Image (cartoon, rainbow, N blue to C red; front, side):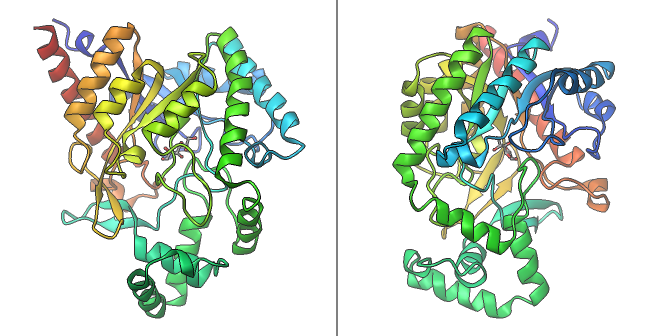
Length: 396
Ligand code: DNO
């Protein structure tokens, strides 16, 4: 039996940040991925992705013997999230980008609806016992940022006293350079987050969400997805919302895609199958109350894209990114559920190894945090092996 046919239910993809990515397309091909996940990062948030720009990118990918499988992401403009009057113009432009992608045959689009910030970490070089570097969200550092650096109004009252005391000690211990670094790490935008902010800009933006609130944000999301799913559906496109990372409210900002219940509510905003999910084990997995294999079983009919990575949660709520097959998430159980779902639905589900440790030769290179070549190569190899083993054992 051809070993690759056993895993045809899953497509191996790899995130590529475009021509400036230090990991070139030919290396991605050598890693064994066949599909590329990318976005037109050079187009400012809110502007239309023209057919010409989409085609140019598609041709570049195809010339390397790969295919453009998934768009990650077309960013959603803040005006849409906040429900401002100019939202309708931005939704119109979003739809135009979708139509232009469809005309070039690109059918799966990821997006997120996190207010202001995309994914958030406090440390991009957390050293593991073996000397490799991982991404980390440290609760004490984060409180230190919120209360003592950002000085958000009312923040202090939202944290327990013992955490505040530790954050205060940490603030006193950090050098000015380390304080600046922490601000940059949280606010300047990690790879794929299209926006970066200064402290003042950021303060003004979070202020705007005071009047939006959780229910407002949900409403804006459901209206948005209803409108775009109708168009996507006509084009046989699939929308895959990325969950909140971390999966709970931070900095007083609402979050509405953190749990199974959130996804159930989102699915019912419109039952159109185009309204679907990017199942990210790394994001959902940080909450012990999220049952990941169960979520795949119950939400799987509208999972259109998958991010696989693992995390280890610590007692105070801090977490770091573990090996793909290590950490708190039972990757075997998740993979099995995904394969069974894909088989039942008779679809090929694209997945990518999400993030990887900075390790081996990559320790001496400038890499995109979380997106170095070798750590992801290791992750993809392990996940591919796991998928093959499961598929073969199911078939027997
Ligand atoms: C982080 C990524 C996110 C993701 C967006 C999707 O590594 O998973 O930045 O791309 O949230 O819109």
